[in-house]
Image (cartoon, rainbow, N blue to C red; front, side, top):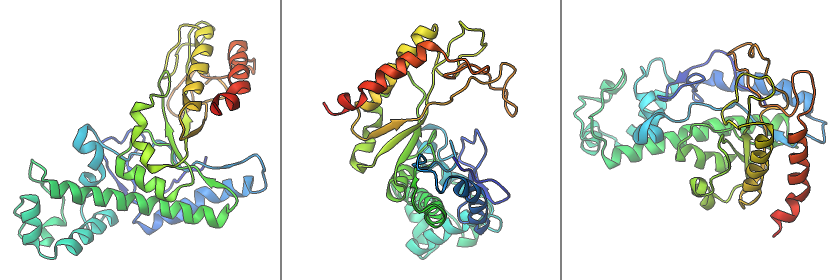
Length: 312
């Protein structure tokens, strides 16, 4: 996994758990992306066991609720000042290119803006979205996502041409961001914390016909001295192992999913990891490098049978 860090502009989505979303229209974003990817690419460029790269993790692609959930980045961009936000300027350019006059935008959105300049400060929107406004928001979010994924893909193709681009490990996402990801990534990735993969919940992926990998999943229990189960709880280690088998089999049984990436190999420290205190029982081994035998046995069973199961 590579990450993009550093000082560049950001856009709120309304669900900014790990921080606001990168602004890919800011030229400094590409500079920082290269700085984050290059050392990882150098480290694994000749590693035959490295299939590809996740870049970033659980980004703020979407806000809250049905409207904000799909169009959160559009709302977020309009909440900014265009003089300080490259994304806001890109959105206004998109709208001017489509409508030409502010009167046509007002008609489409049910608004009453005096001029295009009135949209440069943070925008007050009419409370009820029109279908045309939703269409404009969708087009912006998809263009925003394309800009993000294209920037990362171009850097990876230059620095790591023999490796796959495995996406950004979606946790919060909108359909428009997912569509852009399918266009530009080799494999899409989602972090899916649940007892098993719900095929119906991910039926929207079928028309995209793109391979998908799960970037994170885990189960934890409290019967071996740890104080937190993690995001999906099991009653004990035996149940934890059973849940592992069920989850992996549910992934094997989905035609688009090509793998699932356990988080993480080792339990977290009992006193918590340094930056946020997570102290989960989520390892295949303890913090003293002692395997959980139930998990090892479950992994052997399900992995040994997975190709036959997939080929049924």
